[in-house]
Image 1: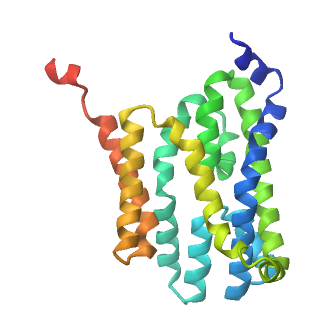
Image 2 (image 1 turned 180 degrees about the horizontal axis):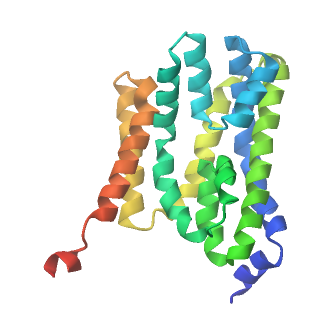
Length: 242
């Protein structure tokens, strides 16, 4: 076993915390933005914090608040939230091989985000099954708590922060997407992942440019997932020759 793998196995709790700390640079600014947005939309401070604690889904939270405030029917809010999170149809099968048949993993999937998924693909292959759960809990809980903390900060003091530093309102929305791209792009080393990323990104950009920003994210997630599975089930050249 190489040195890198051994260091992960020696203290998975510590390694999980160490891996999650860089995420705070992306999570907290965007969570602050959500906290401010939610309170300005009419949600209370406690309600806003609870949304981050129990929905914990980034873009889905912004959409959830906007649709609730606009009076959208509950079924439509649920459908749109599920569409935005359809990217988990790709995440699940990719991390499933590293998870034991342990019922504790089911509630822990609440901690699975884009960034935790990217970290999981990097770290878990180098761990034994017994260490994966401890690493995941450590990294996932730190990321989750940082999101809740950022939301509380935005809900309580967001107006004052924006008033003092107006540029913050322009920068905050880009923090989390930039962090995700930095973490996931190194995974694009094969055709399947590269095409998936290109399809999702192109779909979102085109819909945004043609004036359909509200459906850009869910449509991009669906296109990316479909591209991923289409390539996965497509027979290889060797199989076709057979």
